[in-house]
Image (spheres, rainbow, N blue to C red):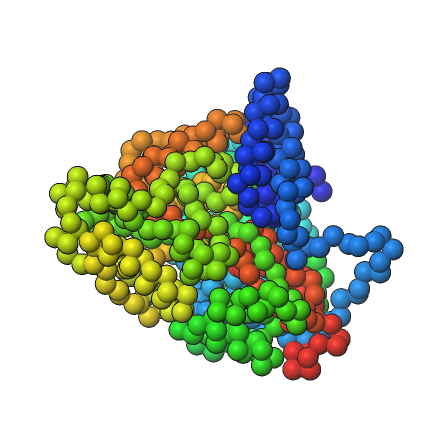
Length: 591
């Protein structure tokens, strides 16, 4: 159903994230937009025309087809009917911290929760916002009041019908001080959120059930990313009766409306789900989904299990990447994603209070060679924070090229002419893969060339590591940020606003805060992009971290796996309800 959209609000269709991100394509798209700008005034219709022009150029220039979404060869081709049955075994690198949407803090939890729960909306394969539990929605002209019409007859896994009261309860939980959700900033623009979080009122004013199937949300000011936030796993809808019955145990025995029902969780071994036969879209083809947990295990070990027929998919281990790309034994899917890998500085720890030192680290690291020699050139070298394909991406942002001479000059300006007078710097990480170790060793070599001694601190698992990041216990850290929704706000605000809930850098810049706050309120697309680009450049100038690489998803799938859909949000957002196994697939998978 077509959804009314308020003036100034952008439903993002992000096809650039579906192609190879070539700088030449981006420059060509910018030239087209600039040319059209000379003859048309800036309007919403004009913005759409420009976007379409950019998309056309991107698609025509892309030399590598998207394996996950190949065009049909002929209209006469018979579409195969999905076979029902089988167990889909998927690797998971760590145990989630919790499967309670309000308490999700890691991508492992998002990966599992997205199969158990639904939100009011979701993202399709092109990152459009599309209906999920809400069959339609509308917004007032000023963008302050949003009204959602819910689907009738949607059942939770306990066979109770979902209602508007469940939506009010689920969203209010994120702001409830008794729950203590670290995701509460997602809804801080809801009317009355500040008072509700502070405990000065027991009722959240801005979220109301109008009737059994209608929910109204009021905001204190326009907030363009709001509808996208409702597609995140953290804002999934939960049944109040089950949450209150189970209490803290809801996070280990979740109940949702999603395509798969929770069966069991054996920590360090597996999380097992089964098909929801009453799913509102129809039961999924798979009987079961088994997340096989590999704590502290490398991608090579996952790949070995895959080759033994113990998994239906596996990450593509770097050391055997060339072999699998050239072979045709398995399905190989490559996809650009909205994922950034970086090194973060804790600005409260010496020597990173000094901007010159932070900039010196940036100039000291050869990111191009790092990508070529450690990653096999499978990623895209990062110049800024926002990845290609993200609205607001600026291909001409001023970042840091490899320049060890400049790095030494900056150290001298900071009062460390040789670098050796500095105490050893400790790089913290929770990743144990061969690739991660190789990256750390290469960074150690680059820093040694400017006189910096690097030491290493290895954490046992993400949960322990993330707590250390929260407390500010680490000095220099590796970090990978996965986009939760396709909007620059999702990168810049949580990571670099002084109130950002993932600002592990301890970075504070009032000018950046103001730009990000203004961008959240802005309803004009072009002005909003301008604000985010200004903020991004200020952040890069301050150098709270080294922006290393933008990820490309690379996955191996057994030849009998069908229905695979990978979006630019990457691995956590694969809709397993669309996957099915050919009847000729391995017997073990179909048991």
